[in-house]
Length: 455
Image (cartoon, rainbow, N blue to C red):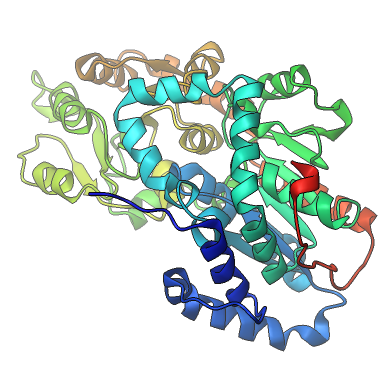
């Protein structure tokens, strides 16, 4: 099969048509895809014109290359609503998917393919780390797609732009520079990798760079960012995690769990990947006391979107209490009801587990951005790392029987390094930055004729 990429001129025509610029023709499949959503947003925008002087637009730029970017974007959106109500109107957009062409509009599937072939992802991550390589790539992309991104900014006219993806700052900042809006629009980057992050996160022209850890802040300083632009607040986690009110006993009753047995939460991410079934089977054996013929723990398995995995686990015969869940939207409750967690080294899950005080057994990681999360957890005494399902089951069985003191100590260590208020600290700081910029009711975005002077 031969794939043909749309020409820049064709793509520009499509985008310009979306924002109401006349004199260009051409249909757009993307317009059909987003038409209903845009019509609803446009209607809402029109109804709020009378309150424009007090309402500011926030545009959060993200991509579904891994679940953490969208989760962080939604956490920031929810925190804005809780803290400031109607003072901000927040949009979450994948600008690349909606406005540009190949390869940017296909990053999600490209990323999923590469992380399934970890050696390929390892080469891509480290191979593009040198600044001269990724700067050249981004400059070439800007030559093709800066106009489309500019049109996207025109559509939402944001007072504040927040990037939660390493490739979402370079071109938007170029647009702001070209339009002379850098002093009017607040631009912030929120890094969603916990420790080892790619250098494309670091752009010297952002007003603020929010770092999840001191290690990331040190990397940013080494890359040339001014210390005054950095803040270390932690990862933005959903407010439902930060301000949970139900006790463990109440949650277990609500979730129909055993109220007496300690519980382990086994996760395979949104796609239910990794050695979930082998680990579950090993736990089924290790958490059953053969001498006393009774269980010493219970198991909660979250399979994500992997329906085949969930079905196969439900069909097994278990000697211990087991609950098998699919894609779960109330992880704060399941984490709050459990005593420890088994998961891969995703930054968001780690941060959530730390907030809930759960000792963590890490059983896998993605090379590059997740590798540094292993020592972050282990060296802080908040968990362990092993890829062996049998070893994992052995550790949990010991925690629930002969090493309860170790489990308690790790839980206390987890809470010590947790940063539950990070998302609120971030939005408050962004609010202060926006107030310093002034009180313009609208930002004067306009279509420019050329970006050649900035290339």
